[in-house]
Length: 394
Image (tube, rainbow, N blue to C red; front, side, top):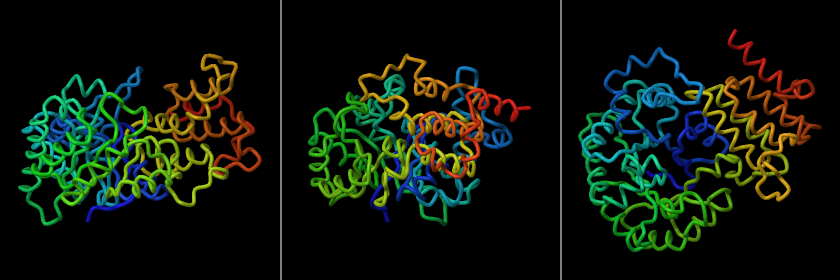
């Protein structure tokens, strides 16, 4: 049974275990995707998983990690049996043979280290970023070599069907964008993916060239659903930021489910019908995430920084305010935004202190601050946040 309702999209350093659990518990997410994993990295991990088990992911001074080591962390540690029953692991690549082996590797690793197979395995055919263009995967594969994209799905289908297991095998899906020819061309491509073995297809209702800007084309999405939904479930994505957005798209298009990325990153509670913006501000969203990050530690502090930057972006970088100057460091918002990416902010304690500093400087909710940071607000400073990191490393 493919769940209906709201799904959490795959996001690089954004849909890790901590955030998946948060989205399920407090964001009404019925299905969650892993961050995108490169097929070649998966195969490198699978060659000797044990060598990654005792090591900590290293981040260099420029904020970079080894992609194979990070993939190992996501596959070996950033999952558990509670997570896998509604987890879709997303792969990217452009070689059918390597994607087939990577699909098998995902199933073997999850079966061995988490005692369960994921709900699904997905092929990324929608990424519009430069890395996808450079390596010929994602939306560039779907547009430039659609026959190869279909072969990739078919090879993954073969790997799933031939995997020996007593459990239910993962479903196979692909996540795509609207093709240049609009709804008609996209419908034809989706039908080819179905024939290749996809159990459902998720469609971002923007074109590759739109990336993540502009309005999603729900008219095109609705046409695709009308044409295809009797053949396989269609999930729609793009510009869905609230519970009301999700309900509107589901009703307008009749799609099986909807998916969101940035909407969740901004505030996971917006997808609850009972959400009240007057009582749940960015400080509450951040602290709720930090609680989950403490329970399910992400591969590195880079994940936490990314989440907090999304949560506080609208407040600390208010693009709708014409008087706001992002280079005016006398403005506490500019200073705090810049402070958030300092490499010495690495611990949960420091990030909680950062939230307390936000409440202190903004005055937002200062009269009734969250219990977990109430004792910090009066005394916290930029310097004390930095020093807290030194205490932890000592």
